[in-house]
Amino acid sequence: MSSLHAFTRADAEVALTLGGESVSFGALRDEVEARKRRLGDLPPGIAILRAHRTREFIASFLALYEAGVPQAVFAPEWTAVEVDARRQGLGCCFELDAALSVTWRSEAESPQHHPDTSVVLFTSGSTGAPRAVQLSRRNIEANVAAVRASLDFDSAPAQTLFLPLSYSFGLLGQLLPALAAGLPTTLLGNLVELKALLDEGRLVGMISGVPSHHETLLRLVGDGPPRTGGVTHVISAGAALSLPLRQRLLRAFPHGRVYTNYGQTELSPRVLCLRSDHPAFLSNATGYPVGNLAVKLTAGGELCVRGDQLMLGYLGAPEATREKVEDGWLRTGDLAELGPDGLVTLLGRNDDLLKVGGERLSPFEIEAALRELPGVEDAAVWGREDPLYGTTLTAFLQLRPGTPCPSRRALRQTLQGLLSAHKVPADYYRVEQLPRTANGKLQRARLGEALRPELRIG
Image (cartoon, rainbow, N blue to C red; front, side, top):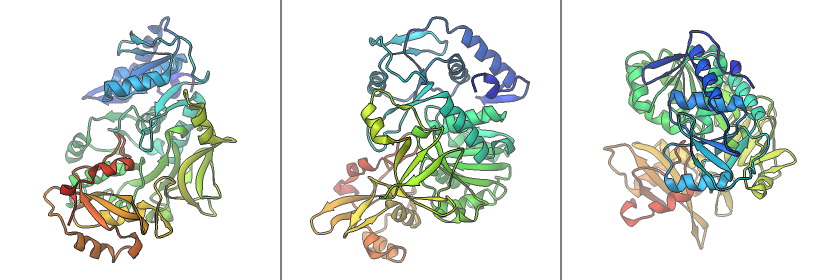
């Protein structure tokens, strides 16, 4: 994928639609070539681009990629403190504006990145401080090929994308495979715009999002007759797709296929995929490895992955890299079951597991049951230290607007019919919004911030 031909076709067909303006593959190719000529003599180090959902960002990203200039993608919404921390993590770097002019330059002058670094993306920080993940062209090309095959990109007529382009799911997992497949992509700002297309009967082809996005979309769609006949592919990643949500998506998109996925930025990012026409889809199974990825479990049940999509390492953090990667295998931090046919079922993160009464529990099952309660829009479970039981379970409920708050007694009684007694949370708190990263991952470590008396459900 060293030339843009692998990304775009030089013809009159539409490549991108942004803000009502369409850009053909030929016009995108011309703009990328023009931007490559404007790169000139750049400073040493890593170029920083702000991932605005614009034609200029996409063309600049592709131009730097083709020219072999290592680049780091920053989210436009990051605060000055967040930007400064990530700049320091990059070491020798400089920032480019939409016209590819240098607007800022670090004091460091000696690059420290891996010589094969092509793109640097940052982990979400849901389980700790964000890391700068170095990805090579080989990583990115392997991911594009794997995603294109596993999600059947070539059979989709078009794609509608509202995911942030600063994260691996949106940029590497959806936009680049679409460009490689010659798939027209419409970029939107939010789900409301997606709903408008749906109402107008203009939503066709592939849509993608994290489970919380799909929950919101289903609420917008409502319970009436499906108006989703043009949707052919529904992609979910970024968090576990519960069985009830899988069933609801199948009902809402009767003419489409639903895909549940798992990935990590360190793996460029797609790792597992499962299509809704597979018998195991209506279970808690997560998927099969994509591309040439191989998986195995440690003695403790942790999922490990190796293959061409494995990152070069964390920039400026060799110790963290060594802790994460051993003998070519990346330790994902996720516990899993591995079926005889290679089907992987995730059980939860190593650091998410809760030990109650001597038994290790995954919060996923409990959270899925909580989401099935009337009026519950989203839910999370947290373990609190207890001198007798070691840990007691606390549930945080995000209720739908206008829903009356149930009592703690009613919640426990309902859950006792769904879960074993030791899995039923002891305490309940009502929150306006669960703490999630910009790409939808639950920040479980921040749940303790909601332990306020006025939020406790009595």
